[in-house]
Image (cartoon, rainbow, N blue to C red):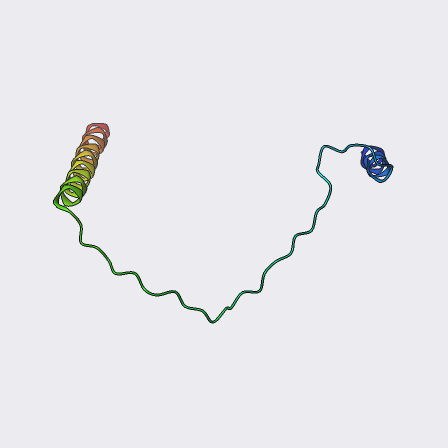
Length: 79
């Protein structure tokens, strides 16, 4: 296995294509780490969004309750 790895290194140094692009360094601009962006105000949810959330929670609760009921029926039958 070492022979395969060493031969790959030799080919890479010899200028053969290794399937990877050549290394290209990029300049990075300075960042001010003390900068705090302004806080966004939270918009109130619309009626459609509240209705969708209600449907999601109700469906999740219903499916979970039904699943628990079914599992209890299996356990009760087995005991």
